[in-house]
Length: 534
Image 1 (cartoon, rainbow, N blue to C red):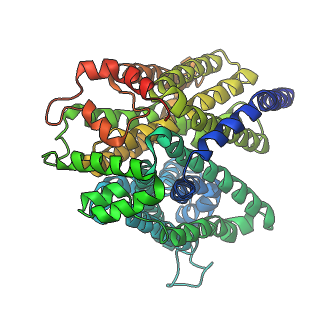
Image 2 (cartoon, helix red, strand yellow):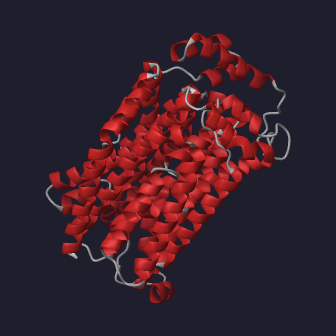
């Protein structure tokens, strides 16, 4: 196994080095050309908004390094006889709830996002998310404060910890919706996909940062006893640094022009657009937004048809049902199941994260060149082949290099497509009048699907009957089938949005009808191809 590990690492490094030699200059030149055509103010606002994505990844991944410590600090002292099967099951169930409690907040935040974005605003909504991140980081690191001395609270303050994690989850739910929405509403159509995709890069980067922070904290202490009483607190407290930075910077960013127009502040919208685009582009956008808002829509969620909402929900659901969070949340356990040591498993997990990051950059460079639909379809097919091959490899008992390669190819397929591009589509397809409400529903559906996949994977992977007959391969076959269905869904149901303004997207959907006109769906790709990058 160690030989396989060494061989796999050498193979990965060789591939990355080869790709770097062949493509690095071309990709840097392409990225430079794109960015050189952008107003620096647009780039700066995008980078600030993506801090919401970074905190999204940071907050959801911080728990991974603290699971064992939380078990030792909060869970084990509550059970006197952990050797008893019933008590052990109860302890594991309680630990699972504590670890996944942030997802409850994510669902709540997703549902609240529509009201917040419409009534309070995109920028102020992000400020609320940043405050929740900060409160969660401080509170989760010292859940006993102010009722007991920090570090001496004990298991009795577990529910305080859960409340702070739920608050952080609400921040994640808000940021997961508002950050891509904010970027989409300030970005020129020709590079909107590119800029929104940077939010996904920030999410993955945030995960990688906290992986290394957790590793550094664990190495800095004096052993497991220190980590289980004090060290885990620093892991959560570290999130206060990026949260504070995000909060401060948000006070220097403007509200989006579309929200200002929704509230009747055309002069404010003009002032913001003047800093983002040329005067000609500003006048065109103002006219399009005014025309869009001037149409007499009720503003109700279904005023553009049920199909539009269905498409948004299913994009979110398929993004999770293809199984990505199995790789992100359970990669270490999967590698342990292959016979690797804990250190080797953690190292392989970092490699998975690095591949995720690299191919997210590929998506950023290609989403506005090739379009959304081609990337989604090709990525789904790559994931399908990888997951079906991974399940078959497990079924046949081969858990070495082939399994590792399948996981890396799957991760690359997701990172170049359904990871960033789904967020691009969700930020683009909904009309101005219902964007906040519709995105809230789609984001909430995504977090519910996330929870279902995270909850069911251990059941599918550890079920005695399935293990006996399929050797841990069955779950991966399920995700492979879901990836095929995702490709078919995009092919049949999702329009191309490349090169179109957000207002032009409204023409695709029947204003008060029953969905997507067949002619618009058939011609959507060719129309956007002709519009191109301009």
